[in-house]
Length: 410
Ligand code: HEM
Image 1 (cartoon, rainbow, N blue to C red):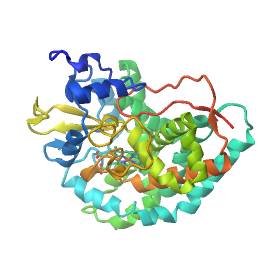
Image 2 (image 1 turned 90 degrees about the vertical axis):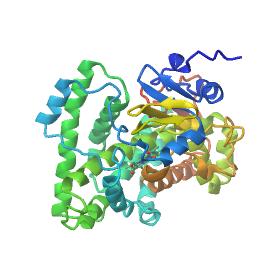
Image 3 (image 1 turned 45 degrees about the vertical axis):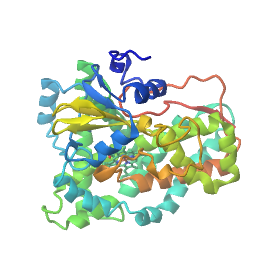
Image 4 (image 1 turned 120 degrees about the vertical axis):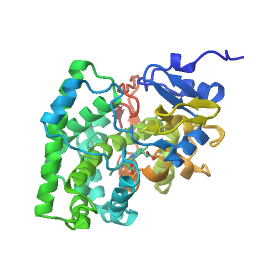
């Protein structure tokens, strides 16, 4: 009999993503909504509750999704003001009606049809990346460092019209921003990381100004064309704010999702062999991998008013941590949740891309580029396997889960 007074939140370390599933399974059963004193968030673990919160965007807004879990110090705030750092809420942490207006424009860019037009370029990036891997021989190597860390960034940069030569710098800025907002830096680290936001923002502002002068065949230019000089459609500052969001959200997430998929498919090689034999199953396999181990494993909401979630009183102003990896393993929705089953009938219900008005705008691109990379790897490297005896490590943060390194051989 579980102790009715024990708060699971006392045993829960929200930044330790190494093996969250046993505690989450217990929470779904014993205490589906619990309070985490470590971060002052209410943690929601069941599928039905997570989905209901996503659906009710008036009671639960997305205003806290890009906020540091340790608030900025005065010194960090001053540094941003001096650096003319003016990104504003546009997509992820915005609320209607502003979100509705901006999202309507951005939706016009990321259509499955427009994404498909990039498929040949994406295939070329995948084939060149895997070709470089093949040249390096069969000795164990880290496939993250050699391929998956940069692949989604090269794809995104091609789509957005950002110079490929800038991938390493932008990856470093984006990684810095994730650690700042989703990790727990010390006061000194927070200052150094905040300082790093300023050149990232300047880079994006300059990029938008350049595309406004000389539009090209890319989505940044498309967004500027949709604006047609009319600030009531989109301001240039809003476009730059969209760009900095996309330049973070559009590759770290996909890198980690590919790594999660490779880890599980190669750990149980019967799944890898099945995909090599039947590559047409790759889209379903990827969907099941997103259910089983979503790279954005948690996402946030802010309670705009008092409410009750699964019998627990949630005060107005409370922060909520929605456990997408737990919702996706809720046995009430996905039977045998800890098994990998490509043939599940309800894979479309998985929540790895969120749900409702903030549903991931990059989902068509992410699905396409992940499928192309897996098609290329299963075709060129069917003998791919994990090197024995490695320890899988994860970066400490509350939301982004994916192995830091994966040693492979073939
Ligand atoms: C496998 C890769 C990815 C995963 C797992 C993922 C996951 C998510 C999740 C969970 C959300 C929050 C949804 C919500 O609040 O309901 C989100 C939003 C978003 N994602 Fe993704 N994402 C991925 C790839 C991408 C890519 C490739 C892009 C850009 C090209 C992108 C851009 C965005 C943006 C801009 C939002 C905010 C949308 C809004 O608030 O209207 N994501 N994503």
